[in-house]
Image (cartoon, rainbow, N blue to C red):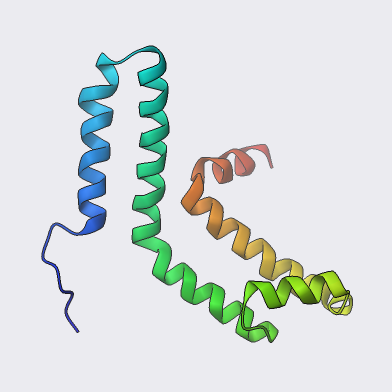
Length: 119
């Protein structure tokens, strides 16, 4: 099946805007505008990573939930709160840990690099 849109893709467009802001705009801003530009650059980076990796991460997450016997995060959370998974601690810990790692890979991969350097 082919995509309904030609190139540039949404990810490529976001990357182009982010690169323009980093290369051309960041150097000529200061103070409050520079701070908000840095926030915007971080957001664009997150959107880029989610567009690139989001579908495969969502599929992997759904597969982990299904393997553990849950249809959703809400179902998993309810079972954890109810104590129904206490005997499966290591399995559930690994599932949640994998999900957190994927969230960090999108939100701020630098946190993972910092942790690897510290360990």
